[in-house]
Length: 208
Image (cartoon, rainbow, N blue to C red; front, side):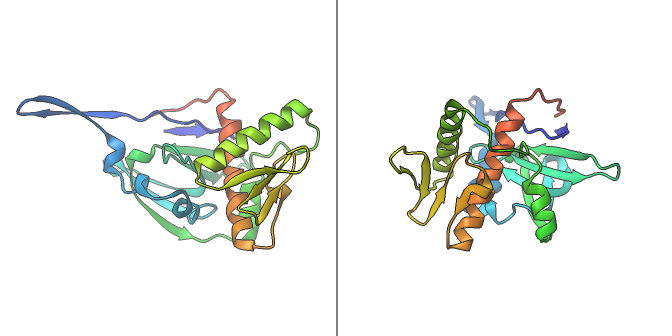
C-alpha cells in the first residue's frame, strides 16, 4: 500500500482461510508476524531511522520510519523525493517479516521528520480543542502502556510517571523532563500520535 502526501491511514487486519481435513479454519494473519509481537518501546527503537522492510510476497520497502501504530503494528515510512515532495508508504503490521536499520540518521533528519505533520502554529486553540487534544493524547499514551495522570488545579497538564510533564497544546515541544531518554521516547510517541490523527482526518488514496 502506498500513500502520497502527508497522510496516514490505519489499516484493517485481514484473515486467512485455511482448508483442513474437517473443513475450513479462519486465522488472523497478525499471529504470523514477529513484528506484531514487539512492544511499543521496542518499536520506538526504529523511529526516525532509515529501515529496510521485507514484507509478504518478498516485497521490499525502504524509507525513514515515522511511526508504528500501537494497535495494528502498521508501519509508516517516509521518503524525501528529489522534487521536494515526499512519499508516505503504509505497510500492514501482519505483513511485515523483517525490519532492518540501514541508517541511524542524525539530528537534522530527526527534526525534519518530527515537523512533517505539525500544523506550524500550535498556539491558537479553543478550550474545547485543548481538552480534545489532551484526552486524545492521553488515550494514545495509555495505549502505548505509558503511565499518565493529570495534574494542576485545572488538570490541563499531563504527567508521565512523575518525571515528565506535557503542557497545552500537547505538542512534542511542550514536554519537559530532566530525563533525556524518557523525554525523547515520549516526544516520539506524541509525534506518532499527531501523524496518525492528522492522517485519519484526511481522505487517503491507497493501493494494496
